[in-house]
Length: 168
Image (cartoon, rainbow, N blue to C red):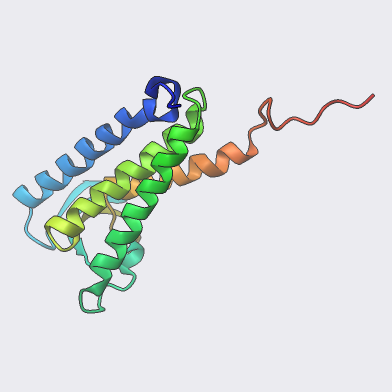
């Protein structure tokens, strides 16, 4: 017997669509208005910088000849399937986990689109302090990191299901 979709975590799939629109829109703007390697100062410690990532986080495996494109695409698809199943099994009222899963799915799909369409992931956020620059990243990466942080945070928040009964 199937559950009504709105009673499950799938109720939060709208957030996946929102993340995709924002991520792919920002990447389209970068591709239309920036040359590869171009940097525009936004404010201290933050630039827009068009970079291509052929690997994963921190350009992991970026120089491995192309097979990594399909490997990371497969991982993204697998993660999206697993998290969608978890959302279906969860109650819609489990907001924190469902929001976290939706953020991760949206980010993974945004980067998956890049890998499949362009052969690389478009990165544009350059955070720096002094001469030290963090790895350039994008809004999909941000959504994934926020989603992962929410999952960790949820583990520390007591809920009625997790509370131990009081012993007198």
